Length: 341
Ligand code: SP5
Ligand code: ZN
Image (cartoon, rainbow, N blue to C red; front, side, top):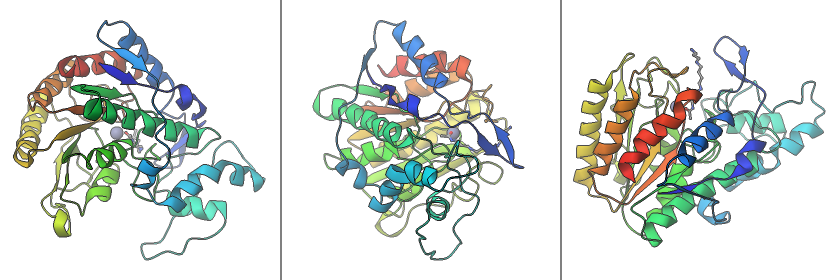
C-alpha cells in the first residue's frame, strides 16, 4: 500500500493549546504521532512510504476561501510584526459574533474571524505543513483514481476534518479529506466516512449542499463533546444536498459492539449511495485509551472497522485525522490498514 507522507509537518509544533478552563497544556497533536505511525509502517513489508506530489493551490482553493488561505499564508509574519508579549504561537482570544461579521484588518482580528477555538495554534511552519498535508491526501486520491491502486494512505499531519471553507479549528487548517474528495468528485461520485472520535464539522459544512459527495460521520455526541454545535443526527444536508449527509452521535463508553453496529448502518447508507470512490477520515481517537476520547473501541475493533469498510469493495483513500494515544497509534493504524491493503 502506498503511504504518502511529508516531513514538512515538523515545522508545525505549537508549544501549547488551551483546554477548557483556560488550562495551558502541551500540544497533543504533535510530531511524535507521525514517528509512532511511521515506525510501525516501516516494520511491515506491504507499505511503501512516498513523498507527496505538489498539486499547487488550485485543488485547495476549490474547497477553501482564498482570503482564508491568504490569512494562513501570512499569519505568522503578521503576528510577529505586532511585537506580541508572548510570540510563541498565534492564538486569538476574541471570536466572531453569531451574525454576519465584518473581517477586520488586524492579524488578531482575522485570527478570531478565521478560527473556531483555541486549538488550531499557528506557528512559523504551519502553512507549509498544512499544504504538504493536503498534498498527501491529493496524492493518495491520484493513486487510486489514476494509478490503479485499490487503496492508499495519506499520512496527514496536521489533520483536516474540523477545518471548513473559511475556518481553522481542532488542530485543523486545510481539510485534507475534503480536498481529496472534491478532487475525486470530478471523476465520479464520492462517499466520505468520518470515523474520528470528534464530529467532522468541516467536512459536513463543505459538502452540506452537494449531492455528488455523500458525507457520513460517526462520533461522540456533540451534546457533551467537541465541536459541540454541530454533528447532531437531524442534520441531513440542505437544498439539493438534503439527504446526502448523516451523523451518528454516540454516547460515552461506546464499545466495539455498539460502534460496529453503528458502522453497519453507515455502510448501508454508503452502499445505497453507490459511490465510485470512498474517502475515510481515519481518526484513531475512538481508541479506548485515547486521552481526548471517551469511546472504548479496541485495536481488534479498529481492525474490524477496516474489514467492514473493505467489504464495500471501493477504491479507497484513507486520510489520517486525530488519535493521541501515541504509543498505540502504530498498532492501531496497522490493524486498520492491514484490512484495506
Ligand atoms: C482532529 C481532532 O481530533 N481534533 C480534536 C480537537 C479537540 N480539541 C478540543 C479539546 C477539548 C479539550 N477537552 C479536554 C478533556 C481532557 N480530558
Ligand atoms: Zn478527533
